[in-house]
Image (cartoon, rainbow, N blue to C red; front, side, top):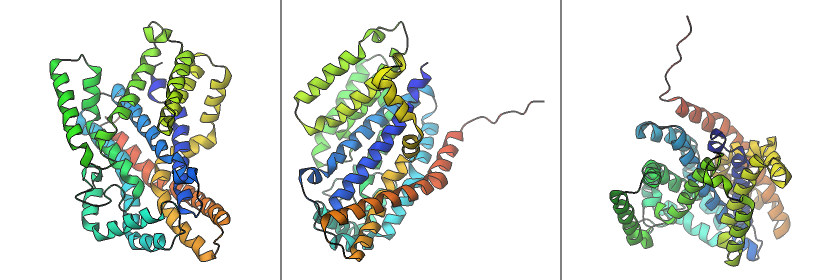
Length: 374
């Protein structure tokens, strides 16, 4: 019963939707379109927050399912995150000058000036950016020491550094949160919080300290769903739809777009739980759609989509520039079509030939070879 909590197929579809959301937000700000929604990048920053909640959940589920040495755990995580990340990082390094030239001549979009600055900082400090990016630790480098440290080369990789930082500390964090609180645990938590508070103002967006509440919420969600699976557990008696309604009401009263990720998270969790326990109504429809082939296909390669799309966007932007089309709407339509098609194509290839093989290899590490029957 608990195994279906450790791997939630609906989350695969959610990852795919979030990845496409991020792509569309970045494409919109590369066009000449204007407006509040465009200036907010279609709120795609909040999609990344949902990714972080998912990571908190997923790593808690992994650690709960498979107790293993830290060395084996982190080796498997490295094979999951680094091969395709380093592939797209290498491409971005090769295209760094091309990217600067492209952004300099891009339409006067919402993010055009910022992207020119990032591309210029990347080239001006490229050896140090590369040193920080190869181990995905650029989220630990203060911008005061290295300009544009979050977004150099591969802008969206700021969250990859954040994920890697979480992977590095997750077993210790989850261990402290899920065992009986002792004086030592309390001292460690307070000391960690004090250090984070002290250095936080100087750290970049991708510093783990900024996102600990979100990772912790993801972890807590896993254990809530895990224990709710047991018929005799008190959590089973909680009326999930009513609690969801109260949570949504509280979030809406905040009247802030920053609550959007938590609205999405609470709604998806409610639908997943309700689909499994009631097997009828809207929740069941949601589950069937999420488990259908198209969303599962996109979700499976969501990581490659997330990493590849800015490279494709730069190439698509250069191609659109060559057409001579300057009208914002036709230009934006071409940019969206070319970027989505190119991103799905290259992502499928990198998923099949880089991401999936290395992931499978990582999962196989440490397994005892099966003994053939006599």
